Image (cartoon, rainbow, N blue to C red; front, side):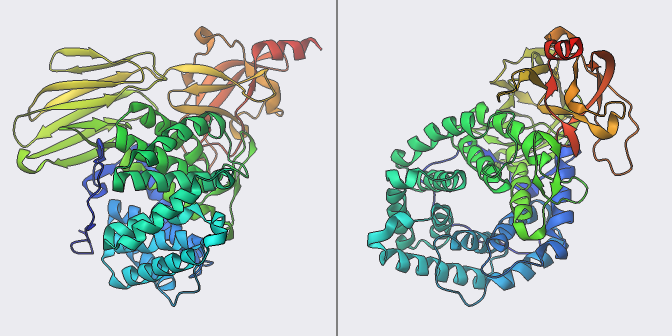
Length: 529
């Protein structure tokens, strides 16, 4: 049961209504890989006192922690998490230091998030002090406004929604105007993403399309340049920028309902996001190369709060309302309760071992017979997606929604079968003779621990790069004692010119590994020499 009664509601109604509306987190429970990763972030990081030991009232980690913890509490209502939130909030709800445009955005974000789930008036009062101070400082910086930090923009919009104070909205419009200037546009990745997050919230609040257009254009550019399918975490693509990219993409999914954004979320979550998290402890990895060894981040570097923030966005991206119907964006075992006000309640129960298999049983349980459209996102990566219900056989088109409109009755079961298609992806870098192997939504890796006969992982590769020969066989593997995950696949390969079975695992599960493998031609050339 919730430990906070009647959480506060915004006093400002958005001018733009979301087309896809995520199911409230407390009305769903996720199983499988998604559920386990969410649990690890909550129990291993958010509820771990040692991980919060270096937080300070002025630190951005505390604000990001509260944002992540608020989303986690929405989902779990875990009393241990409430205790952790209260402890951190006491540090943040403290006498305010002078406003700092580069640091107070995270603090404000956390204060508003904590107020959102608790109704704590002290948090709202403290948030107002930060907001008022920022407005005052901004007014004194007429000649140096290019110093504007984009990370204050979205949190100030959130503060405006809960207070209705027009000065906060005016501040955001003024900052947004400065952020369009050429000198500001040439920012590093995190600042760009903060800017886009602020612009999209301004659009949602005001309905002014001028704020929306640059977001869509820049998203497409960044998708190609900063977040391609085989992008490691680097000095630029950090856990913070990755989480911001997930949040931005989720916002575009909500506003447009377009399946391309769901496709991007699935790719990011199953690969980069999960690869940056230790699934046993919930801690964040500081370094996540495409080839090499992951290293756990220290509590001081702030990765943990950002990683937990990203993981706790997952419940918003699984299922939700879409128009007068329902939509499934990500596939997982679990249950969901949709309360349709006057139209009644619909329960969904999903049985799935996704992404180990693409077989899903979806049980639809309305409290009375009701007609509504159910939209199923068909992944771009699959070569076959079929759904069967009550004798009707439906085929989905890649990259689109398969929409099923019928009168649903208690006991209806929808059977989904999607092919977990395997393909090779060429290394986009200078090493053109390397490929990565993708199965379903997951990038795979050659793990050192499961391939003891291959001392040099860089010298191994599949026996053939042709799609017909990239056959993966599920492997009943004996994992090391500290291993996380239960997926492993055997593929016919070669090492130093000799045939050898290779054992591949999801990139997200590996610690010492190699994603890029030698192409068959490159391996043959190496053996000739």
